[in-house]
Length: 255
Image (cartoon, rainbow, N blue to C red; front, side, top):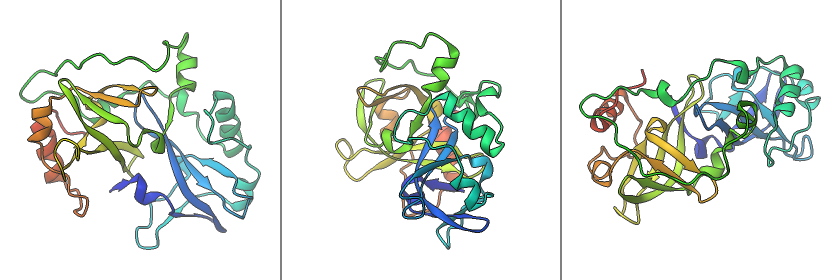
């Protein structure tokens, strides 16, 4: 099941022995686009303290009750290390969380990329995207890059989308798959180019994100986007739509 991040915000987070707050944001790894933490706003319970919860501790979202069950107790969350979720999360802080909750260290997993979303061309070679200026100089080490790789779903909202031959709109939201908590698509609003039309772009088609200039570069053309299957927010996304979408862009599906 795919969820819009904007719809998940406000979901009640339920521990095994009571509520602990609501979903405020998601932090994802900008190399693999895998969600690493749910940011929970604890409200009056912990004086509006925000805490990070690993998807490994989550149950499936309850769409009827608008709730997100978590396999933790309120006391375990209360005693968790204090981390400023608004500031860049450091590896040292993540290690503290890992030790406190007993979570596996995700950064020790084999390196992955958005290739897991399907990379094989079906009919044409991949396009070469226009270069995009990085937001900062390349990190001096893999460890340094890893610490800088966690990004906020809220942060990327409104970023411009740049195809190989021009801008087409902006990021309206992200679609997250509850299986594996992976960002499957960026919802793109093309209102300034194609009024009233919204389309989906898979992270696998992204060639770079300029976090300073707030722009996402994708390896598709404006014409390709113009003719792509339209995204209707009021309709459930099914496999037929996803198959048609990936086929249109010449990429194998992720399933």
